[in-house]
Length: 552
Ligand code: N01
Image (cartoon, rainbow, N blue to C red; front, side, top):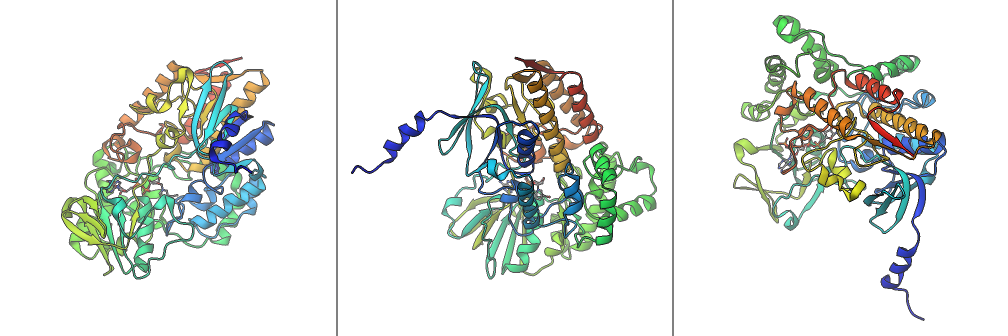
């Protein structure tokens, strides 16, 4: 009997007609789970999710590094559309750890009964629009092909891992891990010489944890960060009870807020205050912990460098007061960008960690940048740092990266990646002209990463659901952003951010962390924040999807 070979199997697979769906969702994180529930249960569509991982959770499935936890308060870092779930679920900590958030999302997947329509281990490699049939054909790395009327990219903003091309990385004889591809079984640092590359929000969470276990930790810092204390702790049952009793108001507050939190700016210039007055406000926010210092500070912080300097001076003094070695303290103080223009990391003992005898800071400015990774460790500034484990905490090709990986081709075979060579262009961060029926949940040029993500995710999922319901109920086949509306939105996004200090930082918000990536502000910083953006999206829908072309 002739054995079946790969060659025999291939033609059979290729002649099989593609499965036909109404809607395909890509990604099974916060966005994808809710999107699938809506499409299937609210709209009655034949919908599936393709997920590259082997479980639900998205970000919380992948990012399992030590210290991984959310930076948003737990009572609002969750779905709010399910009011019963809000009442039933109990978080243990102000900022729950990754395993607890993953458990929550697994619970939601069961509660929404969506697992049966999620296919795991499916990496989408090609997403092509057929103008004749008005269908998308989506192909996965394992050769599966489906067609769908609607494609919803729920791939997250920070899911395309950035491993910089360090020369010699492949020669390293120890173990190297990127924080977003962390082994499920964990990593034992006991008695090891560990190096962490990067000092972003991820590294700020991981460094204090690793330092407790490792024999020696070397931190390779390219740019220092302004950190404020998270002030994590157990959830006070009385506080939670009060919040649960008031959830309707809480939900209304976050949806109409600037950043999706119960936070708002101090409606005053810091320059109009006395030193005593502002010091008291700074102390209050510092001891409150969380994002208050970043997102509820004096209103001119993001706009006026002088105001910003007054605020950042407080944080610089905190670093000097915490780090015992004055030289190390000076190296940990940011000097090249305005406070708040890079993502605020929240810390638990980050600066304190540099007081430990087993922790060394290697500063690209003072000691020289990383030149190579060798068999035995890292070489920076001409000096060798022998290591057993390297933790690569170098972040992501943010926002556009995950979409570019989907091999998207719209009308006329135009590639989204090629079209975005000079930066993303979208209408409302929801759709792109030339790509009918392709929706992006928390896409570029939407508030997304500048907000408490679940708030923005729910708003997008609900807008997309209503939009598809509108099409279905009127016998319409496609919706597509007009080039004019898109150009207007792109200009609006640029105009607003141009009024702020944000473009001055080499941040991932600006695409500056990836060599060759165009320097364009990736999210949307609306003048009225997520509340104003929500209103704008609702108005667009109410006016018959203004700025979109709808057709049969
Ligand atoms: O990534 P980052 P992250 N050589 O890009 C450095 C979210 N998040 O994973 O600043 C040497 O911020 C880079 O240096 P520089 C959150 O939105 C959420 O830490 O570019 N160093 C930087 O120090 C966050 O902002 C939570 O000069 C290199 C670091 O690596 C986002 O994820 C928790 C380098 C990368 O920092 C990304 O954070 C954690 C090179 N070639 C993170 N390339 C939650 O709350 C880069 N670096 C859920």
